[in-house]
Image 1: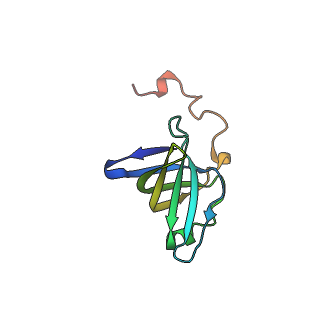
Image 2: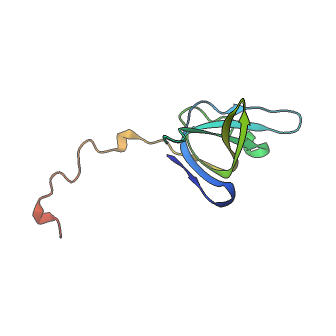
Length: 118
């Protein structure tokens, strides 16, 4: 999970949704708001906005869904506090991690020094 910033305000963010996607349709636009946990200390969560067709296609995302989003980072102030938000150009829903596929024990625990080539 994390937030990677590039040039010109470009950003890529991966993480889990903190809450269900919030659809906000109005007369002119379809909007879906996401809040993504980045796992970082400096930026523990970031808001992301999807517009129009993209907003319609991803408005059913649920809390804990894993996503990767790319877009432009924008900042705005409200009541003296600065907020950062991603204006999403790309989104990918990532498959859930299946913990039953993780081995219960270390697969290398039975190796000896003779098994290692160096």
